[in-house]
Image: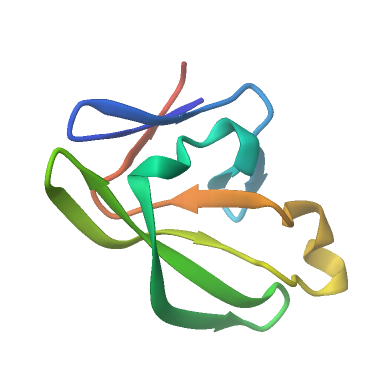
Length: 94
């Protein structure tokens, strides 16, 4: 799978984990220089508190377009150190 924004590949992996229809990329397969930490948080009842990143490429920003669970609950422990994308970031087969 790959994640694309503004025509640039920001993540690529053959080891994504699919949870609730979203592909979670291992952090080491994400080009982290395109991500900027956000203060936004959300809560999932079974995964825990999600943190977010803004995605920025060539001066174009998509706010809160990537999320992760730094301290997932027990049932979601397998997605620790993984990042998922949404909004204008396209997740496509490689």
